[in-house]
Length: 212
View 1 (cartoon, helix red, strand yellow):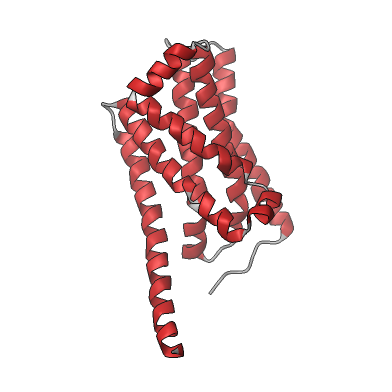
View 2: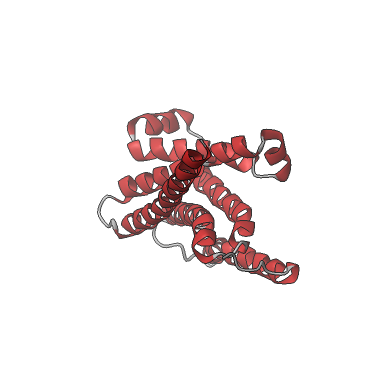
């Protein structure tokens, strides 16, 4: 049985807290940069931190629907858009670090990297796929596309997450603990989604047979 929704005031406080928590990694990175405490390779540090939090925010976003279904609470869905935009924002910082600080807009070298390095190929493809998700995240775009078309498009988020895990896995090569953790969480989220889809299909099938 669905649990009652939170009142507007409580939901507003949760949104504010979520917003501030989502900003913490960026704030910490900024403080470390100001204190010149980014380690021996600052560009690599910024690249890894922004990439890690891109995938983290994307994974948390995908957890909203399974959490609602398992718990009965509706409020996690109200945070999904914000978290998805944070995922895109961290993804923009991740890509910008590579383009600006690492490659200095050397487009020949960038194209060569995309073609020759599989993890960069996958990472670039993931970012491109995230762009339409961010553009269509507004209520206005939801109305223009229609609910079904919007849902179909936003299933790309799962492909982005899978691609993000592959990108991370191929990047680190040796210490695979974090990519394995992300892959495990994503497998659970996909499993819950598939289980509910199969369960819904099984429920609809007997109902359809009784109506004929």
